[in-house]
Amino acid sequence: MEDCVLERIESPRDLDGLTRDELAGLAQEIRDYLVSSVSLTGGHLGPNLGVVELTLGLHRVFDSPRDSLVFDTGHQSYVHKLLTGRRDFSQLRTRGGLAGYPQRSESEHDIVENSHASTAVSWAAGIARGYTLRGEDDRTAVAVIGDGALTGGMAWEALNSVAASHDRVVIVVNDNGRSYAPTIGGLARRLDGIRTDPRYEQFLGWGKRNFQGRGWARNFTYQTLMHGKRAVKGLITEPGMFEDLGLKYVGPVDGHDLTQVEAALSHAKAYGGPVIVHVLTEKGRGYTPAEEDVADRFHAVGVIHPETGLPVKQSRFGWTKVFAQEILDVARERDDVVALTAAMLAPVGLQPMADEFPDRVIDVGIAEQHAVTSAAGLAFAGLHPVFAVYATFLNRAFDQVLMDVALHGAGVTFMLDRAGITGDDGPSHNGMWDMALLRHVPGLRIAAPRDASTLRRAFREAIDVDDAPTVVRYPKGPVGDDLPALRSVGDLDVLAEHGSSPRVVVLGLGSMAPTAIDTAAKIAAEGIDVVAATATWVHPVPDGLDALMGDAELIVTVEDGLVDAGVGQEWADYARVLGHPATWSHHGVPREFLSHASRAQIVEQVGLESSAIADTVIAALD
Image (cartoon, rainbow, N blue to C red):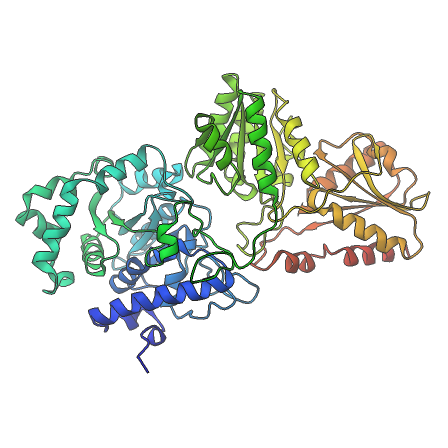
């Protein structure tokens, strides 16, 4: 049986004694393993196929965990997990299995969970300064940051700070020209200029001719190259973009040539201060369906057929697609509506609008703060901007929502995709913070539609508001059947009624409306009169709440946001001001970080199943 090198790797130091042939074989084994395993579980396939040789080089040159490796973003850490002894990917991103990002509880080699981009350089700067202050001058902090994450403002704040230090920081720019989609903006053009400079090909060819097979990794340095090949000196020492900050620069390096990667990293490590290593890689490298894909479908995949890359099961029509079609329809009707995205054009549903109206869809890169403030500027100029973003990522721009949009009465609409419990991407991706945070912003209104029809209606109502921010939040995944109202009480819709004199009112917000209906049915089965209701616009408190409560003894709220300081709590405070005597029972997500698991598992874990809520209600009445 042919020897499997991967099975011999329990820690990074097991790489030290491998021959070049064994390392090449290991790289192929890793790619084969990633395709076969991730196709069964889903996960971030393309980014990891692109960093195989880079990660091998990092672990051969640096001594993790004594040297700290920080991946930005952390979805490119699967190879790192394999090389640090974690070879069981059978439950990737499921409860009890490996997380989709680095996780300290899994391994001493994991430093930062880091699924919110553009933070690695700041982490590395702080770690390296800590080593310096402690007198640990033989330790290095390494930030591996993609060119997509480098579009974030925080990364440049960190680069500015690092350049003024003498700490041992190596910043590896993993340049594949993409984040979720092709990297945009001036940074992308500058990096592309370096990639396509004819001197780069000259440099690669000269290096291979003179050093390949002759101890390249031990003997090659960029001083040697500059001494022997003046023609490429400008490319190596004067790249402009980084050198102007005062940072030393090495590259660009072929990120799929392990010998070159090791040489560049060794040179950077030996320098002993802040160094940029510019590494060129190809997303999806070695897997034909990913290499031939132009839509980045393999950035993150569900369960797929490994031979073709096609999904095993087609996904149902989802919330994002409802929004995608509605904003396209609106764009055809109103030329003042423009859209913004932070490097996630397709994931948030803006690709169809961008295809038809390219000048009216603005991709700012991974720069949520800039997106929000520039949206305020667009509103001042007489347009109505719509910023489509994952709910968890709007957290990064709360100050801009508060001080740039709300303070100035800007008519900006925020479409919060993946709001509520998302599950398998782990604690950083659950969009459960938005309602508790945003309801404190003066003048801001929040909608939580329950189905496709109310999402469309809420979006159109939101873009008609031109003097304040509006928010429409909706969950990840397929959208269910419409839930028609039996009747309306002010701005609230009654979805189910059992009996004529309800002792209990169950209020389900947004995607929890079906749970409210099921809960009411279970309560009614015990002979208790009950009504289930919802509101599309949940903040400020909807008109009609006092009338709906009537003579009910118990009001139950169910939301997939924070239960502490959430919308349910706001409604209860309103009722108390009115002097309504009913008792309130709030059900939502606790104020804690939830480990990766399926949405259904988390719903059960936090007690948001209809049966659990009904049992609590019945016990309270007894």
